[in-house]
Amino acid sequence: MSVGKSKRPTVVVVEDDAVQLRLLRRLIAKTGRFGRCYSFADPAKAIRFISTCASSKQEDEIVDLLILDIKTPDMSGFEALRLLQRNIDQSAMPKTVMMTTVSLPDLHLQRATANDIVKAYFRKPLTIHDLDEILSTVAMPEAEPQLR
Picture (cartoon, rainbow, N blue to C red):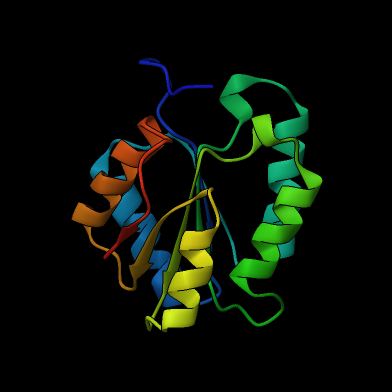
């Protein structure tokens, strides 16, 4: 599935920090280049939502971009990603997964870049520039992971 001219990318944000989430949602809205944005503090709820969207088989319901916090209280971003990959047909997976963190440990970077679906790994807080780069990645899922 590719992002058509008539469809702006649908975004799911998984972020447990209310301040970071508010900032991310503002940035996403400010770009004006994304479609619907859904946010979850709990990765398990986000996975259920993405699964429901995937099972609808409607292109406009498929999540294009998943912005996933690496460290949440109940489940790491890596665990959430593994669970998502086990439970969703690959054709309905978000085209791009971006992982975020407040720090940049080498182990996290290695784990993120080892997964084909992870296209970017960013330090928080994100900027408008980061989101613009991410949008170009959504349009071109074969892009290499980026470190910012």
